[in-house]
Length: 284
Ligand SMILES: Nc1ncnc2c1ncn2[C@@H]1O[C@H](COP(=O)(O)OP(=O)(O)O)[C@@H](O)[C@H]1O
Ligand SMILES: [Mg+2]
Image (cartoon, rainbow, N blue to C red; front, side, top):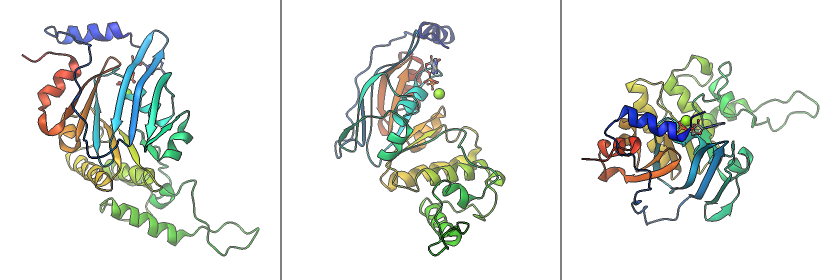
């Protein structure tokens, strides 16, 4: 467990010139054209003495990619868990798609259309791509006899799986019938995203989607993220990779020791400004 004061000291030790400034900075105006898809206000979460989230506001617009960045312990995972219902917030209000909502558990979030792809991807390596995409939602063949072993509509599922991957621009998976365990990291990420967005997803949260990937596979995953945006989904990407941030994000939200300290429009920002906000170093 990290004590926030200790975390702040660590940053000061690492960046001795840092003028650690924990007051929230002015937030740049969000895109005015549309209403937010997700709007969180005053989110707080405490673990014993640790205030992991302090009065955090967060919003995502439809068709927007938001990069959620911050140093280790900043509160990124805690915020994502509050939104995805795996670890509800202590306080805070949530609006989704224009309605006030409560998110108490993952089922609440899923019903709203909030899908989260965690770093471990939660795929079944011993099953093929089709089976992974339909896990728990297998289609039955229409005319199977009562009492007979349920026959799955394999070819229909394979078609739907292929179509979803095509929609996402995923062309590198040679056989949808090969075991997922044999796919590359980028392909596995694609399968996990396809699975998350098969059924009425509106907001997709990706936790470090490129962390384990090389350059070419990272490029594929970034294309995938752009495709989600084109389809009008809201996308939140947690990443430590500043290049990824500048490749795909429209807006950049910075958390530092539990607070939202900065928000940037990617087109009007430099990587140096973002890094400065992450570590709390005032620019010269
Ligand atoms: N389950 C937990 N129990 C106790 N402390 C936690 C727990 N989860 C997170 N924390 C603490 O909350 C703070 C924020 O953590 P986290 O959200 O994981 O940060 P990030 O994802 O930005 O690295 C850290 O100080 C962390 O140690
Ligand atoms: Mg984390």
